[in-house]
Amino acid sequence: MLRRADNDKLTRTGPGTALGGLMRAYWQPAALVSEMPTDRPVKAIRLLGEDLVLFARAGGWGLISRFCAHRGVDLAYGRLEDGGLRCLYHGWLYNAEGRCVEQPAEPPHSRFLDKIRIASYPCVERNGIVFTYMGAGDPPPFPAYDCFTAPEEYTFAFKGLWECNWLQGLEGGIDPSHVSFLHRFVGEDPRDVYGQQFSEEVEGTGTKLSKLVGDHYRPDIEVESAEHGLRVFAVRQLTEEIKHVRVTNLLFPNAFVVPFGNTKVFTQWHVPIDDENHYWYMIFYDFAEKTDKETLLRQRLEGVSLPDYRPLRNRSNDWGFDPVEQRDLTYTGMGLDINVHDQWAVESMGPIQDRTVERLGVSDRAITANRRLLLRAIDAFHSGGTLPAHPADEAEAARFVGPHAVDLVAASDGWQERWREKEAERRRASPWHRTRPEPADA
Image 1 (cartoon, rainbow, N blue to C red):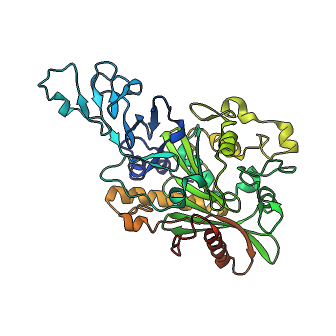
Image 2: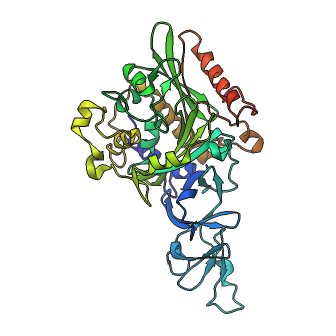
Image 3: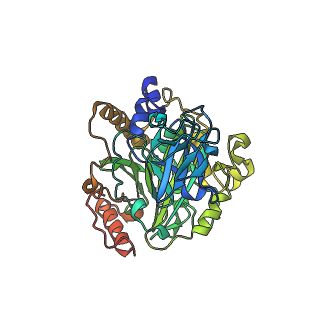
């Protein structure tokens, strides 16, 4: 359990909060490129408790405060002109740096506009997501993670709304033992393989991952520090001779990287809208084949309403719970999309989980390790210390690669070496990755 003060510290991300300052020191997803309107690429967004407006401009994106400094009018309705947004009320024009560059109603000789500046944040596009840096000073360079360096045609980006605090979502993603129960099937897993997590057969077993982890529900959990945050091992003894090894990662501060079948991986960020709601953003990438974006988009859109990407199964309809389905098909009774199962788990805790009354066990090692890391990083940030997974320059950023995320079966003796060999084999066979060097600790 956590002390109440620490629970508050790890869940409050608005302006001026301890964690909010730390989160703003990292690039954060702000929007999908695909969700921006094509006729007028302007969209109001709320991020880390701030109301902002994102807009396209020549060569990139602008992200500024949503409200005009003059009389507080909503700039999300502004006219997209001259690489900026013009307020509809009195015509004040703001550029992507938040500077007021025109005040048509003021006298021609007035320099009043030089005194006007609203919040603005730099933006960079990476594989279908617009990222922003909301911190002080110059932003850190982007690490050379696979999700950023994979060619666009081998990737797919999406998002979803979860109505709870960001940390609940992240902690679900770095918890390797829950998959043995939450994502199991009572009967046969009837899903198509492509684009469905836990639906592929684990190479060398002839068994779908959903059944393998369901049948072996007591993994040994090991956690180790890594340059990107944490590396998490879930090791299941299948027979005396072989183990199933699943390697996942915390990508500090608010993302994780997990395997998605034998050649696919995804990175998923959990990004606060405010303290009681957040979006998850995903970049899915394939080492072997170009992604079927049409199929993946159709699968994802079937379960959400637009423009908010709110799941159709949600608290208001009990996440679609069906007791007959729970008896005969899925462990949850909440449909075939395991994303909904995760959503139910974290939303059912309430808007902000009260961690002062929880009881953690040995299987929660990754959860406790992450909380300790977060608390240390908050202290380091506010004392000017070194931050985890925060490259100081481009040379250092180039060393932040991977991270490795893989499912495999290996001999009980030597699995620690075999998972690295297996991952190296996958990367050497990849048409886009095979020429890249790999540091030993990726």
